[in-house]
Image 1 (cartoon, rainbow, N blue to C red):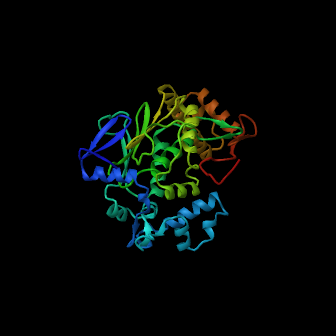
Image 2: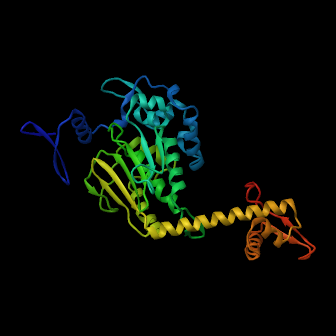
Image 3: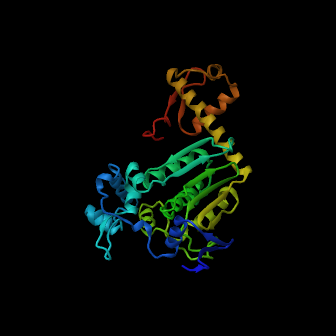
Length: 366
């Protein structure tokens, strides 16, 4: 840290900017220092301040992905210490749970008491650009926040059919699990700037306060990865909610190309900004495809319900009850037969329908 004529400047790719307020100076010292603020110790933070069952939930997620993980055989205290969530400061002798533990497990009121500016805004802004069409104001722990954000993305963004080998994968999930994990793992939580996750018609923008190590655009293979919160990052990796350091950005580049035929932008400044372009053509096509698919599936369910009520119902009667054409009914019946959900028993005129598999009952398989 240096002064010029009694003034501190913050140098970035865009120029040199005067640092005037105490908060700005504090943030600059954090940026330049070697101390990770996630390691801040809260001596009076106890397990009773954690959400009931949240630690067991996290351990179960780890168990589901890595049954032999060494954390699973530790006592609760040893687990917290091994994960870097309970530490001793050998300079001061202070010991206790850290900010990382608070953020991962804490009750909302406890987090707000310690970090009152903490929040994440998930916003849908397609029709009402001045305000929003949908919004989630997230102030809970990071484990639940990850799920809320991923569900928000799943609700408002289409998924694209894609086969990886002989397995269908969700490109949307591949992209946004990385982006959301990056937002939560690498945010500088002492900075009062709110984190935002905004879905527009043509793009998704994600912003979070940052402790910059580099300045400018990040491109795979052309930067040295640097963890802003090593313990939070390690915990997300153990839960399989993030990849090892440095691979997340590469994955987003890879899967966004398949999803929208575009490339993301990762820009590291005081705010870390991720921009994911959504080509309108692909978005519209996928939305239409999903809408059509849902309409057809709902109609198939109605046909199944009518067959349950009357196994001898005819195609003509089905068309009349559903107010659709006979040709549409015929196509739907053929689809149900192809999916092995119904079977015709007996003759075309004197027979009846038998239901083999009903998708509304997930425990039943064809």
